[in-house]
Each structure stands twice: as C-alpha cells, then as structure tokens.
Image 1 (tube, rainbow, N blue to C red):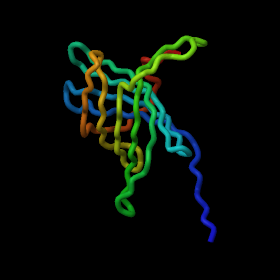
Image 2 (image 1 turned 30 degrees about the vertical axis):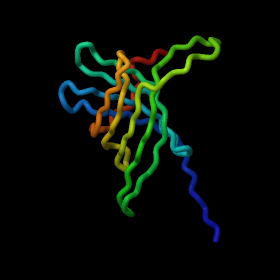
Image 3 (image 1 turned 90 degrees about the vertical axis):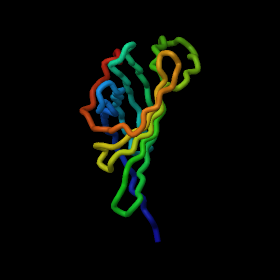
Image 4 (image 1 turned 45 degrees about the vertical axis):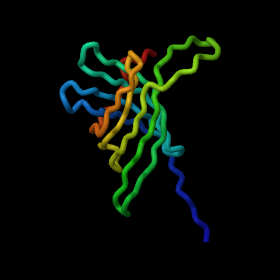
Length: 150
C-alpha cells in the first residue's frame, strides 16, 4: 500500500494582540508571516505599557508551530518563538555582535488561528526579565509595525 502525504504550500500573514485586557497591563502586538511547508513563523513584535518609564520593547521574532490534537475533533496550534532586539547593521558592515534574546513566546491558538492564550517573557531596558502568563490573544489586521524603517 502506498501512502501519499499532502504537501502544505503557501504563505500567509497574521497579526495578534496579546494581553492589554487589563488597564495598565503590557500589550504585545505581533505580526507574523506563516510558512506552512516548514511550519515556521517569522515576524516583528512590539511590547508596550502605559507606565512611567514607558515600556517599549521591539523584537524580531522567529519560531515554529505545530498542531496539537487531544481528541479527534479538538485541535489547537502551539506557536513557540524567540525574539531578538532589532539591530540596524550597516550594509557590508561585516560580522555583527552576538545578540541575546529579548522575548520568548508560547502561544496556543484555536484551530482557525483567530484566538487563544499566550505566555511570554520580555527583557526590559534595565536587563530584568518579566513574565506574563495566560494573556488573551486576539487576531488583528496585519500591518507594517511603525518601528520598522524601510
């Protein structure tokens, strides 16, 4: 018997708002390109918070996703990604510095990619890690983040 596997194709863009449901809570806006053939996600994110001093963490984030089916008709999508600070490196500038991560994301989405829950942590300007758990995730219109200069 010959089994044939269906090869996933295509690329699609998604945007999410993570958290921000409680006044003063951090808000993580993230925009991914999703590449099904390799189950990869790549994108940009911005974590903000209306505090003093204001929180403004920009991240270039990359990772993978996988489908988790716990019952025949109940599936979710697990996205795991790591983000790094955005570095403007001159063209022909040679080898760059080793850059440490500034965000880590674990997000469980509904099978239709429209909502879910996320746990993430981020590195603030003082070098302290902060962890956010059980933050609601909602689908938003993908856009070019305002901190990217073309």
